[in-house]
Amino acid sequence: MSGAWTKRQFVGGTVALDFANTVCYRDDPGRCFDKITGPVELAGFTEAALQLSDAGGWDATAPSPDIDGIGFSLYLELREATDALLRPVARRESPAVPAFRTLLRLHQTLLLDQPLRAGGDGIEPDPAGRPSFALIVTHSALRLAGSPDITRLKLCPNCHWLFLDRSRNGSRRWCDMLVCGNRAKVQRHHAKRGKGALALSTGELNNGG
Ligand SMILES: [Zn+2]
Image (cartoon, rainbow, N blue to C red):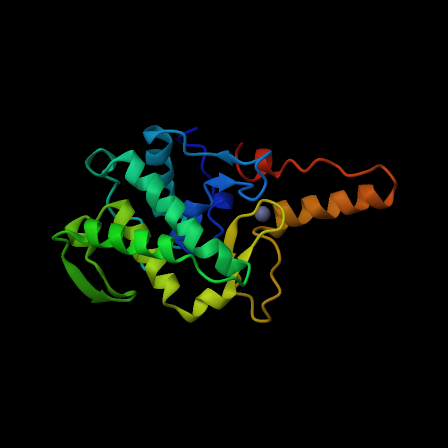
């Protein structure tokens, strides 16, 4: 499904969350599905993410991902560690220590000889050094982990995506009001009219499944 990524898939608020959100309905094994089924999908995602994700200071001129050089399995390990660290936080539970260790290890590995700069995102990989997308993600995840923004981390009750609620009064409930919010509204409406629960198909709409 390379090329099928749209702005609606990048609502997490930072690139690490958008990457974690490439798995939909994580908390429901019966509906859970992974949009990144191989390197082709990963390449499509990274290309779109560098354009559409709020990558915290990274812009569209960031380098294309070196998937072959880093390895597909490392990307998946990175994504799962990011989710495992942050999902409990969104539930107001303790962050997962093994996941944090994994992220720190991957970050260290990915830094290698990368040049750094002090920029708008603090000390960060210098884009001139053509950092890999994986390094951009570890940087994003660890930056969020050390930021007051962590208290704004939420879990969409419909699709189970992670997102940062940057609303002034902290009242954002859905990853995307127009998709998950409306789906829930329709479901409530049907339930009220005695038609029973309507199967939510946000996966098809929002998550491209
Ligand atoms: Zn959602």
